[in-house]
Length: 175
Image 1 (cartoon, rainbow, N blue to C red):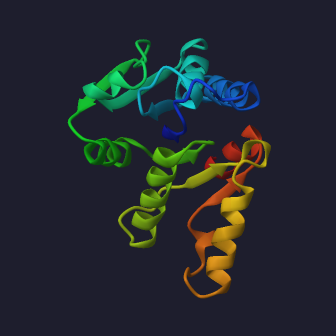
Image 2: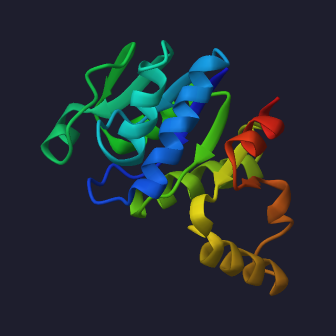
C-alpha cells in the first residue's frame, strides 16, 4: 500500500513528534508499505522518510524543485517526482496514494488535510484518512470541527476520517 504522510518540514519540532513518526516509518517499512510524502528531509516528513529508509523501505518524494530554497529535499527517496506547483503536488499525492496520514504540521499540512477530506466528502476518492494525534496535537482542531458539526456547518465529519493516537491504531484502521 502507498501511504501518504502529511506533516511539517520544520527543523524546530520537539522530538516527541519526530521520534514517533520515525517509528511510523519503521513500521511502514516492516509491513512492506511505501511512503508518499512532500519530499522534505527535515521535520515530520524527514523523520518518517528516514524511518522508512533505515529499515529497508521505499519512499516517493513529491515536490517542486524550488521548495529546496525553503527546506532541504530528501536525497534518500526510492523515487522523487518533481512538479511545478503545490496544486500539482497535492494532485500527485492523491494519484499515487492509497491512504493518508495527517501528522502534526503547520499551515501547509492543514491545507493538504482540508483538501483531502473535502475531496472525500465530494466523492472524488474513498481512501482512508487518519489523523495521527501525537501528544494531543490536534485536540483543539478536532474540538473546532465538532463544534462546526454541532452548529450545522459540517455533516457527519467523523465518517470522513479516523483519529489515531498510536501507530498500532493507524494500522488497525488500514488493515
